[in-house]
Every structure is written in C-alpha cells, then in structure tokens.
Length: 180
Image 1 (cartoon, rainbow, N blue to C red):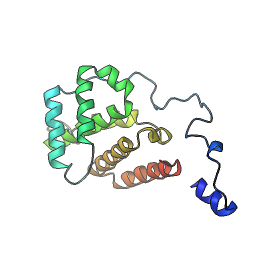
Image 2 (image 1 turned 30 degrees about the horizontal axis):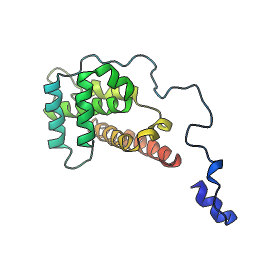
Image 3 (image 1 turned 30 degrees about the vertical axis):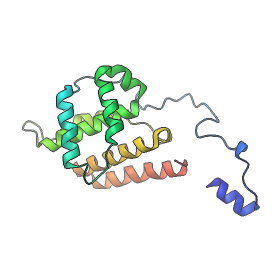
Image 4 (image 1 turned 90 degrees about the vertical axis):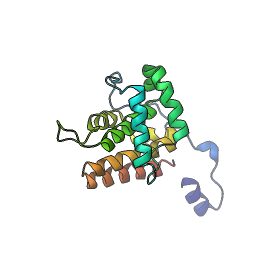
C-alpha cells in the first residue's frame, strides 16, 4: 500500500531498499507467544482417537469451511505423534491449529454428560492462550488464516457471535495492514 501511495503522489516507484521486512527493523525483545511458560502437552488424545476426531471434522465441517490443508496438516500430525515436544515448540502455529481441530472433533461427537461446556472447550482455551499476537501471524499466512477461521467458528459454536466477529475482524484488519 505504501508503494502505491508513493507512486501516486511522486509519480515515481518507491525504492524497495528503503523498506524493511515486517518485524526486522527493530528487535522488541518480545517473544511471539503470549505465554512464555513451557507448552502444555498434557492429555493429548491417542493417535487413533485423534485421527478419528480429525476425520470427524473433515466429515462434518470441512465440506463447508476450509479449516486445514489436509496434506500439510496430516504430515505434521504424524510428526507430532512421533515427537510432540519438538513439534509443539518448533511449530507453535501448527500445535495451536492441532488443538483447535481436535477441539472441533470433540464437539462433533456430542454433548458432554458431565459438563455444561461444549466438548473440547479445554483444548480451545489452551489454543487461545498459546495464540500468537497478530504481528507474528504473518509468518505463516495460510496457516494463520485457517486458525482464525477455526477460532471464529468455535466462538460461534459457543454462542459468542459478537466476540467471533470482533476477534476475527480485528486480527484480519491487523494482518491486512501488515501486508500479509
């Protein structure tokens, strides 16, 4: 956008060397994670149950909404079950995405008999606690968009319609301003 405005005003193209890539001009000394504590890997479902939940999401939701790229998500899925700590720390966006997809899978199974919460809400909350700040979502644009779609749909399912719209619109606007 800056390039377009500059070329309209000065009638010359903007010198690309004067531009910095997003987040490279200054080091804020700030990690991309909101929570600097170690990643909580407690209680992931077994590989077979997680596959069942992922397939449940594909059957119930994936036909209407693109929540994840099946090929990319599945390859990381198997890597995660081979070495969960490494994948969760090396690919935090994928781990957040995994938590959201599994939360959706649990919600597709049905209502919990012991709780007033939508099944999978604990995984959704954990994903939201780990979710990166908007300025760091530009790193993986497609994955970030899929995560924001998951967040919006889950908030809708929880009957937080206004929060869903506000959250996704604010993040989408921030990503747009950053040129993602």
